[in-house]
Image 1 (cartoon, rainbow, N blue to C red):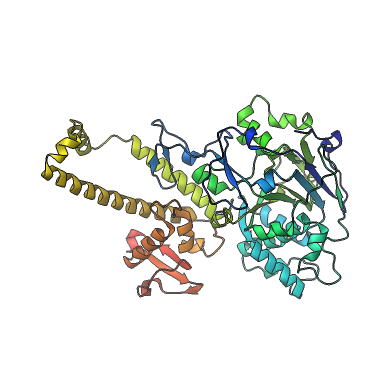
Image 2: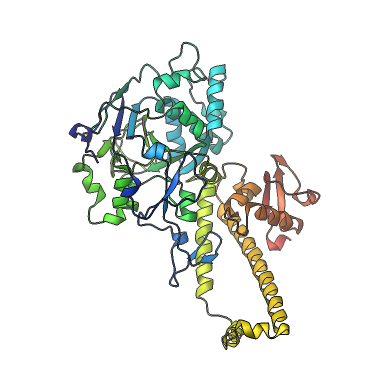
Length: 549
């Protein structure tokens, strides 16, 4: 690929009114990937296609055991190994140069400072999802004057922490897209008031391109791109002194956990929120894109002899961006990146002073709804991952346990041998085998129902101390039906589907194992709701302990 100019390797020292765009004309062709021809599995937006791709990592929920099997999300086993596929959207990976833009002071300071405060207070990261419909509605509110003229944020308007984070994520995402668009496209959007500049005059754009073709300057993000997307996963991370973020590629985390398929975002970015001076913690992105990630792999494990961090000063395709308050980066979604170790935060680093980064990943309608169900770093995402780990350990312990005496005796008897001709010659035996098969299927279904009961109990256990982005109420041990459908339901046609989970919860409620706390926000008497025709996904429920039944 074309190598970057030496000037691009240097640290960018931008004033508050400067925005820098760095692009590469390098393109990734299918011949440069490992594997055979493109594998078509359908379902991808924007003419996307699947390519064999191995970054050296298999999620723990899909890792093979000693028998060469792997365990899926609800404990089923299969001889087929997990997929090793990458989603490639040609218009965004092959037809456009790898691009990185940086803006200072673009997002309202009130939003940036509020994001810092809400992120540094927690020990855990947070995550949510903003749909493009929400962004457009926000822009319309700006146009109608329902929003403050300067788009300032007032935390007093939020009813709870999650609502505050959702609204802050929406405001930051709106600024993110305004910055990604060209000034001409941004000016054509309906949210711009008469006489107001789409891109504030305090942030003129200066563009620098890395690559050999300096004259070709394709548009980075357009209005038609906005029409194609579904939404944005947004999260906040707070880090303390000496921590760092290892080399990685952004992708839909839950999809990776369940299928090992890598789906990078169409567009990605970060917002740096800490007002204190930070030494270290630089954001570094590699303009080699997928070619570089294929070489080094997940956290650099494919080329461990060449420490990725040590190449920052020797490889000119690295772009290093020092940390600065209210600095926004926007980049092609398939650029691998990392952050350097934090040396100091402010004059005196304390446990309450953190390097806060807010991240953005833009997804299409093929994957966006799946990400929306469990955004990375959200409480429901953490519970889902913990539940998958629990199911994995449970299934492996069951498989490695010795058979019971009766099972061993039956296995020994069956091992004496019987072929199809014996069965055909004995109708009575054939009938008995059919009945046995039916009974086996019934027993397996009952066991799956029991597994689902245990999974529901575990989901409630894991919810303690967490707050769901929608209707969960951890203080009373309650969860929404929808969140349980999202956590436990399968989308591959196997039991249980999300509807299976809903039906199971409804019958558990009728049997007195669950009580309804509220329906669509209205508090009800859980014991008096047996006349509900069917348990709605909007209902919030609480599990009743055996001692209270």
